Length: 126
Image (cartoon, rainbow, N blue to C red; front, side):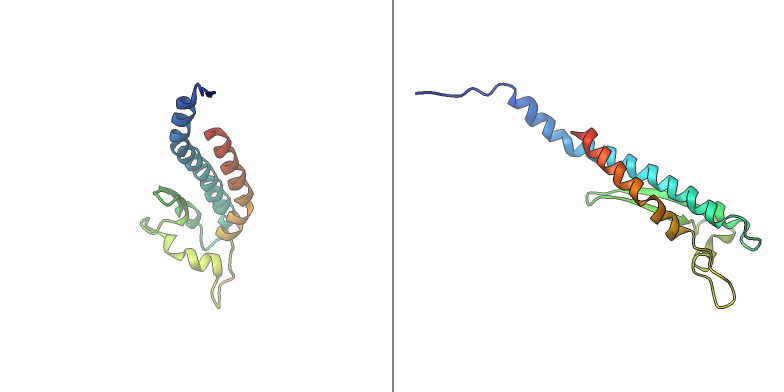
């Protein structure tokens, strides 16, 4: 009877077992880096308006890692005092105030960076 011996399979199985954790850590880094870039981009786009002088400083970001995935939330922190509550007015305008699109365009401008970051995270996790 002929047989086959596989040597080193335990190492491969162990490595695959830690892949998910390595990917989670690396992907969280990618989301954090891109969220910071979106925040800074949005702050820059919203700066310079005489009525909303303090608003850009209220734009923050937060990262949540859950069993379902990783979420980056960027926008005005309404827990901060001042002009944070005016985020929707600044972004979309009103009947008497022109919009200053900053969050949407900042997200769009940095979307490819997130994709590249996730691709790097997957490669590094392997």
